[in-house]
Image 1 (tube, helix red, strand yellow):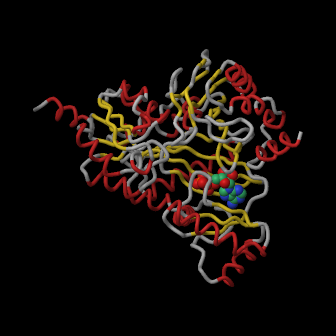
Image 2 (image 1 turned 180 degrees about the vertical axis):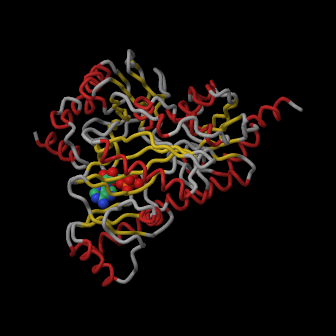
Length: 461
Ligand code: ADP
């Protein structure tokens, strides 16, 4: 038997095409190499000099800089996979990672999609059907109907009154903090719906909207799960991602501070049950709002998340390797009893953006100094001389720390941020340094609205 077939028979693939860019492309490539798998990196014209291209077994340029013509171009990606002899495609996060049609196209091309099946993505990727599936699995959701908003204005007004103002209008296919609008009172309801519907149609290709209660002071708490193809699923503890600007996460931590094990335990188990019920495969995250001691499901992310490292550091599980192994058809290597979470971890998203205005900052990194030492991890693809492109998300690095206690982890992050130097472009590092000096954040008492209020106060001062 040729060598390649022999290798494939051990798993279901031996070469992985990484359909992404930036730090996550580098992170996935490392996991593949550690598992003895060959890698195919792809790039747009803007990313031709990406460092992970040099360390991949194959590196193919699949199109122009605009994401729509490269990282979102399904045909180009599948062609690259065929040319490079890939047996699997890892979508990373963003881009095509939650696109059910892409998962389907990959499998139809005879390749393995490293993620859930198209039907799981379709069910859980649509926020309305996810809500319905979670209600069926006995998981509490934010008050509001589990159906799309009708067109009839009177019925919409009635739904809002039943829920009680303020309400939030959300796109069923929304993501990345977009396609959401808070409605404080009745007189702006219809305008908010019209604007959000138009936005949803343009950005997510579907005008489907739903409405729920806008919670006033919740925290964002999420549960990481991992499932195999053999009916096993575990949850790997919880994270707090309440530090948000414009509904987008800025700092994440694990575990969520001050949540007693007996409160979170049933929620984790319900997530596992929901996975088993829908036959979920691979990694996923259940996101909840937590207010006054109660959890309310908001959505599931059917992919690897930006903040997965904080769970890796507390649980000791390499989530990307586990995800790839599950896609190869291997059974999980651990059961729930084996999962223990130790210490505390923080992640800071380092973005190429102005620390005051948050406007993206493109250009060449002229100097880079990264922190190192016990309990410090940096996930990045940049180096001195790297050109930050204006075409994509501004995330250039993730700084992650781990220490025995939350207070020690905060100190470690302060020191790590002090040691981080990026010159040539603007970054949000000064803003992150200031945030890690904040008293309420140090005490773990902040909700999802805190950061916006903190920024307002700073601007006013
Ligand atoms: P996305 O898919 O764009 O990330 P999510 O549904 O996960 O959207 O919500 C993102 C953030 O928006 C949440 O973490 C929270 O801060 C805020 N949010 C969403 N739903 C509500 C709600 N019902 N009440 C208050 N805030 C909400």
